[in-house]
Amino acid sequence: MARVKLLEKDEADPMVGQMFQKIEDSGSEVINLMKALAHSPKICRDWNRMGVTLLMKGDLSPKLRELAILRVGDLAKSNYEWTKHVPIALMAGAGQEQVDALSHWVDAACFDDQERAVLQYTDELALGIRASDETFKGIAAFLSQKEIVELTTTIGYYGMVSRTLEALQIELEG
Image (tube, rainbow, N blue to C red; front, side, top):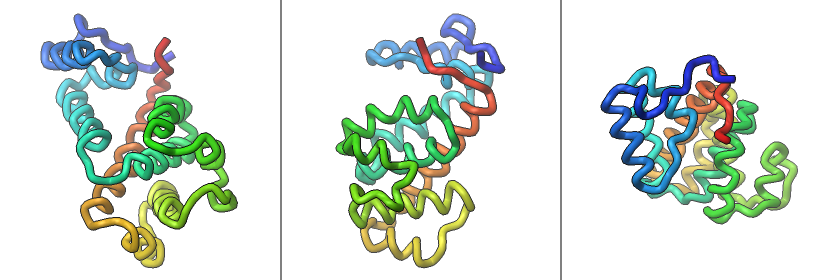
């Protein structure tokens, strides 16, 4: 059970209620994470804006983005994050073999050089905050500076997502 009450649209600040209505009107479900964040309306609003930007408005390959997100969720042991993003990763072009191998990607043959560079960068940022010069050169060989900024921000954002989910013990919907 979540450590904070999951607020429904009619319990939330009007700004959040309107945001929840827009999400529902688009055919999407308001996820439990947003219902928890609704306790802080401006954080909820801006959190959602950043998530939408990272997921839908960037230049970074969706497949690379999702491999990084899943790896962050795996390292954080965030079942919620993992469960939500596996279908997105598969739709973005990741194979089931890749999803299954993420916990031991270093030894898995199913990742190409670009994916390995992204996963190495993800591991270093998620586990140690900084990436080595060698690792940074590895991603710079494949990604533009804009894509590097998007990847770096995605890793940081989903680290925050995973930490919030786990700290507040937010459970999957349903």
